[in-house]
Amino acid sequence: MDKIIHSFSDLVWSDALIYLCLITGLYFSIRTGFLQVTYLKDMVKLLFSKNESDKGISSFQAFSLAISGRVGTGNIVGVATAIAMGGPGAVFWMWLIAFLGSASAFVEATLGQLYKQESNGEYRGGAAYYIEKGLGVKWYAVLFAVLTIISTGLLLPGVQSNSIASAVNNSFSIGTEHYNFPLVGELPVNYIGIVIIILLALIIFGGIKRLGKTAEFVVPFMAGIYILMAVIIIVLNIKEVPSVLKLIFSSAFNMNATFSGIFGMAIAWGVKRGIYSNEAGQGTAPHAAAAAEVKHPAQQGLVQAFSVYIDTLFVCSATAFIILFTGQYNVLGPNDTYLVQNIPGIDYTGFTQAAVSHIFPGIGKQFVAFALFFFAFTTIMAYYYYAETNISYLVKSGNKKTYIWILRVVFLFAAYFGTVKEAKIAWALGDLGVGLMAWVNIIAILLLGNVTLKVWKDYKLKKKSGNMYFNSKEAEIKNADFWEK
Image (cartoon, rainbow, N blue to C red):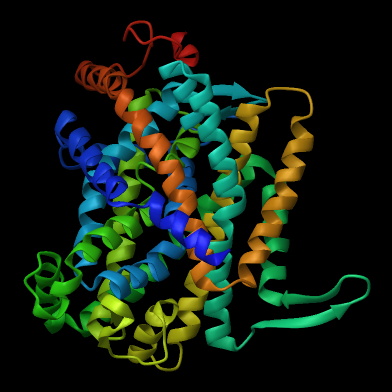
């Protein structure tokens, strides 16, 4: 079964998907005039606008909810994996997919806002909604919704919980134990997994408002503390910055003899882990974007574009520099031979803990475990919201509450299951989920690109006039019912 999962994951993440992600980001960057640079000031300004309502959350809460999905295990273990499999050059390709992907993130988030609708007193939206309303292809929308429920409800939570359990076990030796239970026999028990599902249950039963409030409080705290630690480590190693940057760029462009044999792997793993981390083009962040209360759909698109920067250019870079400064990493070459083996006996799940411990021996492992807990836990929260939103899309009435309760039980089981499963299989399942959603969503946003450009043109005109509002009929966009008033 493990071999089948790995083979299917590799098939989904073929070179075709890698280059599709890069080309899509480049295409939208050009068509929007590289808004990720030219409208950076607007992104920051819109981030803090106070526009919360009874039906929608504020831009900052939507940003925080999306960041909680983006900033997670991928920022700590994912970066380590990219370096382990693709060498230091993979970091450059993570940066590139973040820069280009921010344009893709703008497009999908704007579409999420454009085609959102009200459901039970809350705003709902996402890729399934804009595929059905924008493209008019119901079966394709249903396909995305089903894939998202399976991916975010079953395949992806285990990656985050597995990383939490691994980090806590490395720091405090709290692993999985096996007990014999009456009637059912021997079962694995992980106490960290039990704590995770109890905390999750308290939050996910509270709805989108509680998710938004929790993310608004936790996300700035967790990201700020982690980046502060990285800044301290960078300052302590400031003389090493030029050599680390040289190592990254020389490896990225096949000019480093040590890593020349894995040049293709640097691109593949950099893009793969970059998208896993920042989710640009994956189709998950539009769910959070649609929940925001804004005057114009493009406003939330710009906010979500900025969230990609926070995720990859700040948090992922922080992890990469920590690992490369300290040299606490291994790089696997062809035929499972090591090109670099600085820390024998430690795989990629422990690189960041080993690196921080190298600088702060007394607290390093515990600090990373603490950061990873918050990073991964808030990502699991976001995954639940994505899955529930697609349940709401598929089931408009009738027994919707029953399906949501089934989702909650399955979701909590998946989160617990990840804590007692091996890291490699957990990551293979996670990659499979991300890849399947990305294939469907990227094709959809390319087909809807002209619609987004109409919204973008309207935003620039409204900004110039000083009267910010949006009317879909004025913009000649059909089926955006919410914005017709």
